[in-house]
Length: 128
Image (cartoon, rainbow, N blue to C red):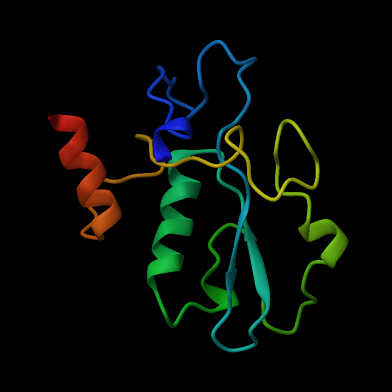
């Protein structure tokens, strides 16, 4: 069942599938702040941005002030719901998640130095 979503096609260093008009395969994701419970957007275009998001997801005490590239505080407004619906899908602006914008694992969003089960499984399967 999951094989229909898995694409083992070649990806370049930016996480794009080669031959698909160089469209990003990672959509924007959100993390809740522990203090104010507001959702904050994480862009996932580079390996560094993916690592920041990955670490924030694993940190149960993540706060708005921990966002490294935007100096944001809990006092600032949350994104509007209409803006939050746009997550960077190349096919449909308000996509809920499709095979073009949701990545199930690649060298951009999985890390060999991470000990979470998803990264460990990915790195062990790619070596085999």
